[in-house]
Image (cartoon, helix red, strand yellow):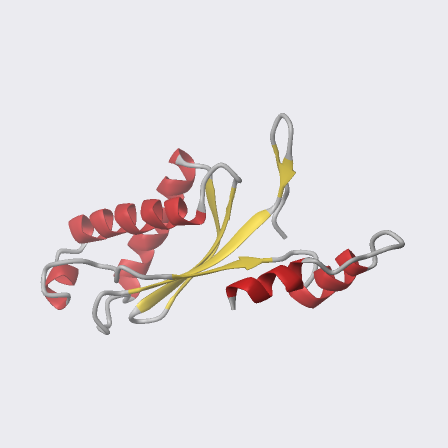
Length: 147
């Protein structure tokens, strides 16, 4: 289980599930490339406050379970991970560029989701509702403005 990150004035446990697909549906992440990807992720962890809890590959996409600090946004984490892994994997495995027609390793998009260590959305919702004697549901009312 991941540990809390303790800074001077805060304590956080921020986990993100990121899915990054390859540019084209090609079998890019084969055994040698997977090993290199792992090494690159270790290097990223040493230079940035980004900890890779798990990394799992399919042939054409990668799942990352990442823990980071609040000062680094999800978009910044994705930018760091995608840019460094692409550069390093292209350098170490030039055959990938030929499989992907020479351009980019990753698509421009990605999937990101927060991961809760202490409960699901429903558990947290019930916890918030149980706080205080006069709970007033205001967030759902405000959400209707954006629907």
